[in-house]
Length: 376
Image 1: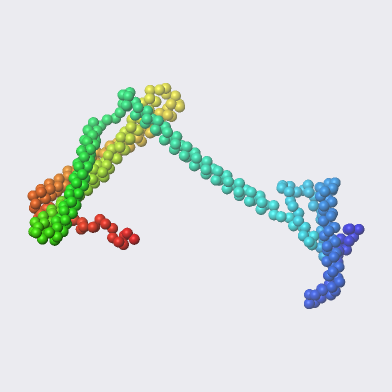
Image 2 (image 1 turned 90 degrees about the horizontal axis):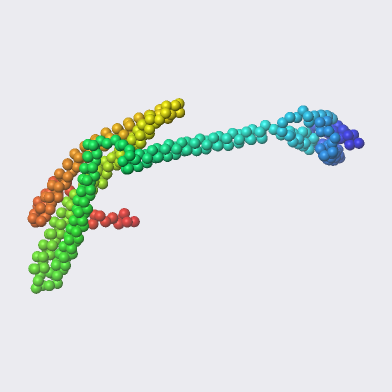
């Protein structure tokens, strides 16, 4: 009975007039009712087949349309791969979703995850190799340093260069002492100049308030102001001297000492790899040992070239440092002597001439203070 009703509903025709309207509203209502009955019957048939059907391999799905009845049998045994979900719309048409879309997304996500994992693994392996090389090199250098300290290992020594390095370190210690004393002199002399300035102001004020001692206070005020002015000029010369010594000690000499430190580290690495190569050469000569000897020979050659290059750099820097030191100290010592002599001799013109010869420009009072615009 259900099949007869489905076939009747499927074969009903809808007469349409020339203007596209239905001829009879009653026919439309009957058509809609027949379609609803068809949908409910098909839904029940599908549920019965899915739940209690004897054999899914012979399941048939009847589909129909308004053009006539059609019946198609889909054998489930012929379907391979992942399960297919069959959707039936209101008119009984079958819709099979695109099964390649989900698989493509799965493959893309799996490929991206594999690529990220491989990249992470590569970075980890690279870092591990770097740490391994660093650890091995540190072990060899530490072993060499301990051997040298206890007198068991040999070290490469350049006697002439070592003597020059020791002279430089001793010179730097002495120049640091000169710099410390010059800064102390500057601080003390600055305090004295400030005291003279305050004393001159006090004398000038008392000369106005003490008519009976106006001349005496006036003389002393003028003297203190003159001494204060000459003291500020001398302070300019001493500050220039301190600045130049500071540049020589903490920049020029320090740069050379940094190169010397790199040279000493290169020497230690060179001796460590040299000792490692000598130890391997004294052992057995099997295949594994020969491979290690070849690798040690390459490392020995690399560190030897590095050691020789840095030794040449240290030699050149020591030579230029000595020339620069003589030139700078000759100028600064002459400045210091002339400025001190002119100040304590009371020769103001000679003191000012000394500053002109060395192109020293005094800062005006209050130049160190920031302007009101910079404070904002």
